[in-house]
Image (cartoon, rainbow, N blue to C red):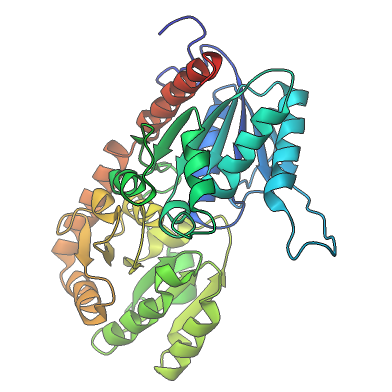
Amino acid sequence: MGPGALSLTPDLAEPTKPFTLAVLLHGGAGGSGVVATETALRFARAGHDVHFISNRVPFRLVDRSDANVWVHQVETLAYPLFDAPLTTLAEASRLAEVIETYGVDVVHAHYAVPHATAAILARDMVTTHRPAVVTTLHGTDVTLVGLDRAYLRATRHAIQRSDVVTAVSHHLRQQTYDVLGVECPIQAIPNTVDATRFRPGVDMDVRRRFARDDEALLLHVSNFRPVKRTCDVVRILAEVNAHVPARLVMVGDGPEQPKASALARDLGVGDRVTFLGAFPTVEAIMRSADVFLLPSSLEAFGLAALEAMASGVPVVATSVGGIPEVVEDGVSGFLREPKDVPALAGAVRTLLQDDALHARMAAAGRERAVTTFAEENVTHMYAEVYEAARNASSSGK
């Protein structure tokens, strides 16, 4: 590495050259916000200054005691002339202020629209220096928002004007080329998991809050958007429970929650489903479950599945998007076609009725999580990305 290289020592304890990082993210319970927060906090623990820019305190930012971590909330103006708040402009203005006040070296935007767009605007606004802009694509910013004609050109512009672009899976990387027609290089960097926080070991007190010892405990964690197919999670429980006594815990909140709750009552399993809402500390529940369910119709990566694997919990999911890059079918879990509830439920029953198979998959998932998706490996990738972005920015890309 040349002069001014940004890197971390293997134990992530000592930065070779401290720098200031600003992170634009969705503060809610979705995977992109979780990844953005926890990736940035690893750099904060290594001695770099980290500034979060969001409309709320990030969901996973449970400890704000670090002296080198700041949260700058974005406020929007309600004005009769406009039908909706001008979020992107407000975010760009707030970011520009943070860049100039704190001397931000790197802006990391998690999501192309609106965050990368805001980052590009802020970079053009500031007069003190030119920060590097890194954009990480997480999925729906390409596959949903990016494909909408109202946003396609803006999405493509934000991606191509970034100094470095990453995607959370090879599948999403290729989709970005195919559907948006971008021409800039995109580096696939997978999500990672804190394998100390998410670890095997059933907490019986937690487990017995939701299920008896002779009942299976199924778990689903998401933001309850339509692509998560949360109603299919309930249908899977109903089919499994017809053969094996089972209960379901659903963590998260979103537009599909009322539908899932109503369906559980209609299917006669309303008393077997617990909706916990969104909260940041899911690890005790995660490692106490028997099977994790992720029947999404679209998934760029599947972070919750990786957290389950790290917790020693086999995954039953759909073979869509980036999930096959995380879960090895027949090794660390089972993958089935989306919307095929009988096949998904059958995979769950197979795991619950074969203790040896369950143990093998639990161990394989844990091993894959702590090796292929090790924190230190992914953090070093981002350290190299930040260095490359600064080099590109200084050359006036």
